[in-house]
Length: 92
Image (cartoon, rainbow, N blue to C red; front, side, top):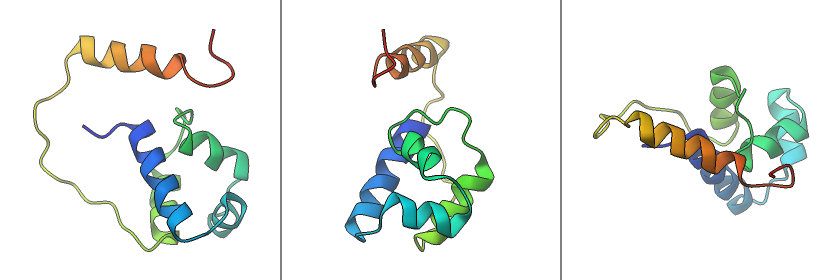
């Protein structure tokens, strides 16, 4: 299952491979560079679908639905959430 942090990391990889800066991409879709930075680092929990679609389009990609494998369990979701809190400068 792709998570929002997974998508952020993939997006960062795509952006870096095209030698575009966060500021350039963020400006092209009408968002702040800090919001894009949080998304790429997996810290953009409030990231909207609209922003995600605009970012994909700015990089020449589109989002598609693919059949998923097994649905995550509650334990999987809680562990993922726990892990996302334990990274970055604000972690305790």
